Length: 281
Image 1 (cartoon, rainbow, N blue to C red):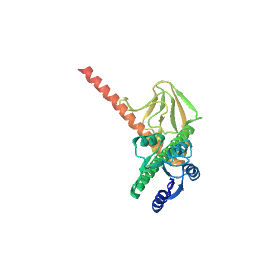
Image 2 (cartoon, rainbow, N blue to C red; image 1 turned 30 degrees about the horizontal axis):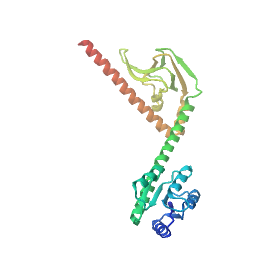
Image 3 (cartoon, helix red, strand yellow; image 1 turned 60 degrees about the vertical axis):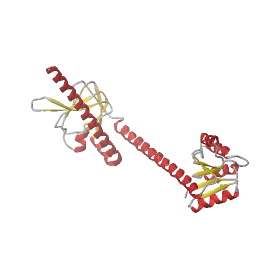
Image 4 (spheres, one colour; image 1 turned 30 degrees about the vertical axis):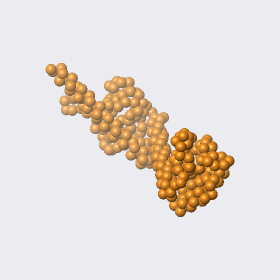
């Protein structure tokens, strides 16, 4: 049940408004002036505050100002209940951080529409925030898993054009590029190479054969001075089995990288073909 704090010095308006809200299944707290309203807000932490402007002891502007300075109440939606309709009064309230105005006299429908609209909006914002926090937590967890996967591993250094693995061999590990660049390629019957992948720092290579449990379908060669972290097959497979969420995200990331690789290679092939045509002309 949503909690609403109603701050209003007029007894009749306060009682009638509270009754309408209670009939609509809201838990209603009431206060007859701004000072007691602030005390109630700090104690009950309502989901919404409806507050009159012109009140004794402390007016509505003062209530809003005080509550917005307190971290525990600054994000509570705040609706002014007022007979003041001058543009300057609206502007002052909005500048202080009010979310809405309800002008007296008002109907029950007008009251409930304003309340429901504001509560729905705050619920939507909370869901977006919670989803964002969950996503951040998932991303942080995956970063930690990746870090643990590659940190502290033995490394191999490769010279330019040195072979990393050969087509047809059985994979025994996953490679992570700490420094340098690697290309993967297939060799046809005439001994010509067809480049099928280009990889840079922070990329994995050799993963496809591991995931498919097959021999390498291409060879890999360092394109410059390169340092690779060596991740044993057993460690990689254990992480995938123990964390299905990480497994899905890891495979999705690899699939995205494959698409980027294909687009890059297609662009290289297109540029090469265009150059050949230009040379022929």
